[in-house]
Length: 310
Ligand code: RIB
Ligand code: CA
Image (cartoon, rainbow, N blue to C red; front, top):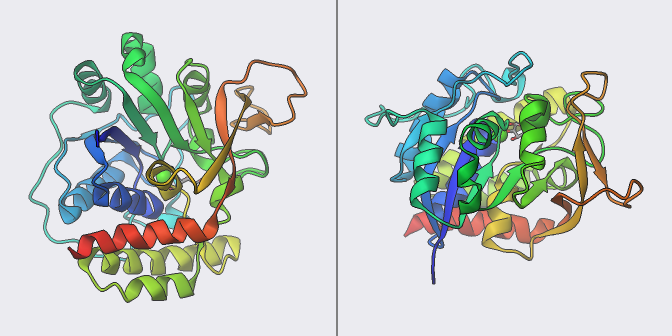
């Protein structure tokens, strides 16, 4: 079976970490590279976390840093959820690997010149991807789809209107959603249904391999902060939904619709206006996740963690 070529663009981040665990476990993927965004923490910290994860998981691919500065608005981060390091809760072994000498956009450009039918999986703000499309539009033909965690048809999680990844750089999101590339948007409407409840953590603990141990340690921290900030009994495990939807297409349902990113700067700045009922009769431009099979999702997470027991 031909492997799916993927590039992950992330801001680890506890849920980004689980997305990378899932991707690294799956034989059906060829991970061409991982590029890093600021978001959950500063670029220095999300970069360091990404190297730690790639080394710990034994993923052999280049890792390149973005500039960590949104196209227009001022940078934001989410230390209250992900902690001072951006990946609190686990101490990694000493790092022996380093970043690629290219920055994120240069690595993306080189990988997309050399590969066709590439799936890009952003799980953080979209600055790197937007800059790639602005500076090198000629690579669009080699991107088969962009499968991103971000946005919401309903309520936001940073403001009433906006979700974190989109509101961190609305102008970048606007470029991506209007790029003409197939965009699949997995927003809060589905990711808020997959809460990593204590009983799920307990079940994964029984797998007892080095990656399930990492999962358990990170999720215990993640749940503490999610409880404090949102009152959740289990944190919504947002980012892995992208990877899981690629591994098993029965898990997430999508509907093709028009999505407009609010870049007006008002109270709805960074909102993904998803025209699910086609009120405005605009041309659809994204496949938006409308439902998720929660049981199947956790089955895939468990299978992914078990794949590290070999
Ligand atoms: O809103 C959730 C998203 O913001 C996730 O990607 C999480 O990691 C943070 O980046
Ligand atoms: Ca993320």
